[in-house]
Image (cartoon, rainbow, N blue to C red; front, side, top):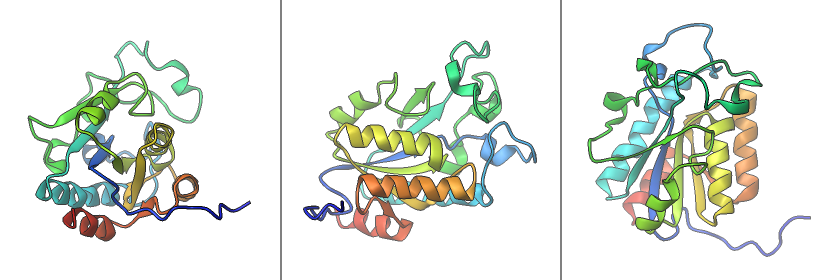
Amino acid sequence: MANLNKVERSLIEGRAALIVVDIQSSTFIDASEVRSIDNMPGYRDRMEAARGAIDAARECGIPVIFIQEVHHPSGVDFGRELDGDEDVHCLEDNPKTALAVEQMDVRADDIVIRKRRYSAFFGTDFEIYLKGLKIDTLILVGGLTDVCVHYTFVDGHQSDYFCRVIEDCVAGSSVEAHEAALRAMEYLQTGAVRSLSEVQAAMREQ
């Protein structure tokens, strides 16, 4: 049954942070046709578009938090992650695992959360920073829409944050998976899926 008692929410409720999920060097230096993780067409373009959200956040004094997936070269921390379609990826000693520092304007004093699972919340100090910054709204960009973005969104939702995802600044393992993940996030929080222009305008109104 449809929720007839929904409360209309602002795009940004309270204090926001921009969460940049797994935009790493592999996107910009790996032109392989066969990749350890599938990327939908236009993946790189969507990651590049995320820079527009980062620049707007910095201009408006909104904290930017970078999330980086890493795994030990021994593979001891992969767990069940390789039981599906993904091959070995994001090894700590591989240059492709580094954050896309130049493309995303990652700065020395930025908060960087290194994670070993899909969600930025799982086994990290992410929420300690969110609490310290008194964040209410998480604005997500990056990849994959259907994996790390989705699971971070879900954990944020379950932790009672307002969660938003910029649809033109995220990309999935396939177009179908990307679109399904966006629908799943919108199901959890009405108005969660927004465009870059909408988010930039909301940031400037803060």
